[in-house]
Length: 114
Image (cartoon, rainbow, N blue to C red):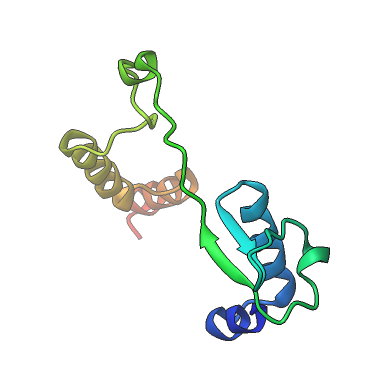
């Protein structure tokens, strides 16, 4: 069965087995054999000719009401029109900005009239 995952995803056998074990440990999937015996460990799955993978009914984790009422933004920076306008203006200003040494050399050229 792992060979089918390898063929479909192109991932290595190690990556697939570790991922499957992680999902089993988190009780997100359940792996059983032909007889319906639940196989939680990789050792118990090894050598089995038929393995059956199924989703475990997820438990609903309710968000606490205090977290729902929080007014702080999820990110420190909001992408809104005013921020986008400010970013655009800053980028436009930076196009014309130069290093101080180039500005000094230009002012010397203008002063000498070359």
